Amino acid sequence: MSAERIDKILSSQNIASRSEVKAMIKAGRITADGRTVKRPEEKLDPEAAEIMVDGKRISFNKYVYIMMNKPKGVLSASSDRHAKTVIDLLPEEMKRRELFPAGRLDKDTVGFILITDDGELAHKMLSPKSHVYKLYEVKCDRELNETDVKAFSQGITLGEISFLPAEMKIIDKDKALVEICEGKFHQIKKMFHAVGAEVIELKRLRIGQVFLDRDLSEGMSRYLTESELIDILSRKHGITDY
Ligand code: URA
Image (cartoon, helix red, strand yellow):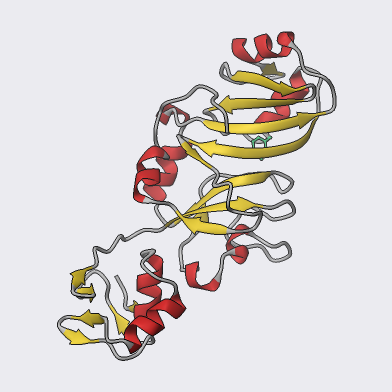
């Protein structure tokens, strides 16, 4: 791995913010290969250097995993010449090369999007074979009923496309929770369209067994915890309360 600034390394490992790292350096709390780090700009190879904070060795994770609450109007892409992307929304200290959104939410969809530089994890999370379920909250343009629930549970077909059986739970007249493990293009919108309803609002609430953090307002991001990183690939499913 190439050398990175020490403040960036420690903030990417969720140890402290870049301004906190500055204060820690000032207080002489950070060492690299046995000598005290003097400047936040100092560059180190995090895989090779022995970095310690208060005498404790930092174990370095190669990849980062970020939960974002995606707002409307933002593209699920790494870059775009015209529109703002989820990567543009990341705070500077979280930005690093190779980050991409694992999967797509439509421009008008909000909620949980995972941003990472770990291609293998993204593949596992997105492949229908992995059975990682995603939970969506849907508001549509008509009242929902048990016929819709049944149609979803039997598997929806729209023209040439067929979708695997999906659980739906009606939570209000025109609102439901729906859980799917595929990620076909506009899948939720197409499934509702197939039963004669149009989606008005769509929010992703959960990936695997990790819920969107209620404390993250739209546009905000935070690193996944270690246990969330395991739970994001969980095959467990079934609609539970948010
Ligand atoms: N299904 C959709 O139709 N749109 C999304 O953004 C996600 C799932």
